[in-house]
Image 1 (cartoon, rainbow, N blue to C red):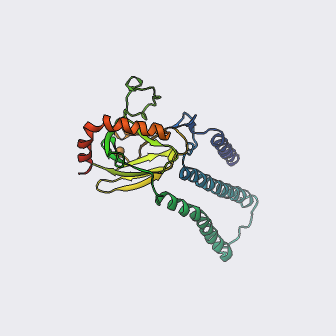
Image 2 (cartoon, protein in one colour):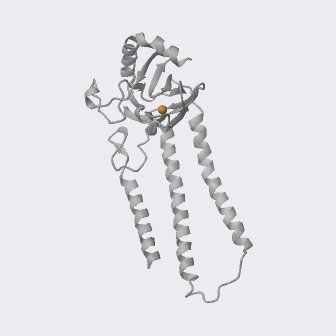
Image 3 (tube, protein in one colour):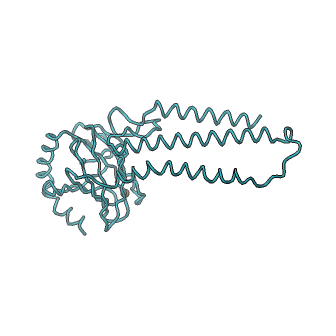
Length: 283
Ligand SMILES: [Cu+2]
């Protein structure tokens, strides 16, 4: 009776979490941000993120099939080989065929998973000819940004504490909104160089399928090409100290003309601090 109850519970849980993940997107209308009760991945905005999503789903199906198969075996064994149904137990301890099968089949499954996985790794790793480069530097506890091929200006992005601190009419997202934002053009290949000035950090934006470690003394690279304008959020994803939660990433993907206007404005706005920041980041 107990087994049947826990089996029932298991099935109900599995089916319901499947249904929830089918119908609950973790995204809020076009914003690259997590939502309450969302358990799915955020809506992918780049080709790489779409492939990550497909990969995730592909593996999820395989995991589910394996789990159901093992569950069925367990139920069958409990029933068929119970004391009541199996009065004279067999003394068999080896079965060569089954042993070969339970070694070979998992190996084959891993090979099947590894092929798309390696393809995806390659796609994430090899950066196509970039349209622009930005540099993200992790500090305890904020991010610094540089636009080396747009006049090499630099600025810092700190988390905002409350709605009152937002100066323009951007939406305020708790623990995600920053005072200055990263701005990039839509449909352009952006190369991101990631490093850190003190300890390990990680520059991660789920909707872009990007997560790159920021390592002091080393320049890591990643890339994305956002295909939709909007605001996307990310976070530092490497435990970096007491205020690790206070270094979010806010990226605005805008049209080419808006980007050009922002560049022009920022070159003036950040001209004063740039030198100091650039010096700090090159140490
Ligand atoms: Cu950090």
